[in-house]
Length: 298
Image (tube, rainbow, N blue to C red; front, side, top):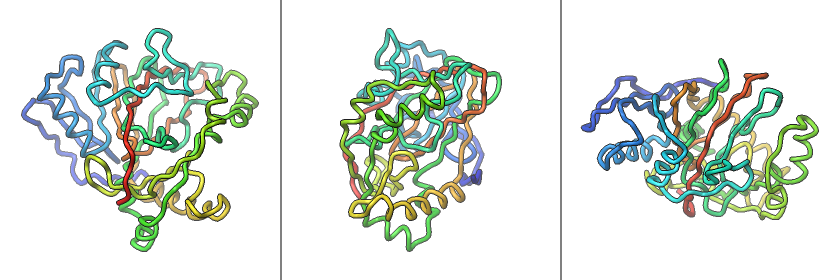
């Protein structure tokens, strides 16, 4: 897996609001000097502009309550209540992304794009660290703007004319749930019957991002099952080749979580992967996902 950095500068910049913005190695930017609980309109506009341009914003030293988390997410858009993760008992808008010390499997431990299996894929996600292991548990991200840019020209041109089929059934349905519980009896997802009943959806393999206007790859290793007009078997070599090229050549950001860390990412512009390297320790994260819109081809 490549950890090549595609960022061309590491020089911090200071917008008019006074916060410090530093490119994060691999993808995205890290922002300091802002308290998201009390961000005024001008400060939030700066954060939103960074999100729209980079697709990935990391923040440190935040003190967000669950109510603050919800209020922040609502500034970005309408909250999408997750169908498959355990919900917070008092705040159902929040999905509990938890691994207990005795569990072997973790949630999100594979390269993916949240909700690409929805007819209108999620705008983004806001993830807050609540309890962390003493080491490990980082989340990796990569930019799908960069992912498309590193592909050879002939493959870019081919993908521009294709549509890809995405599904949740194989990931969250009854069969996959039984397999995961065979591996780890303590691992559970919710509403497997809902996943069983969900039909597959198609999206352009290369999108024109609805806010930035940039071209982005929109296939991912977890939820893209084939290309439209092609069988799973015929699609598999092409998908595998695309995924391998991306992971070999695009920059990968490794975000090390600390107490008070927040990551905000655009699901139309990123892949991510939660590392499962903290066996015997507890990790609890709170995630809110945001409604998106239909995607148009580049």
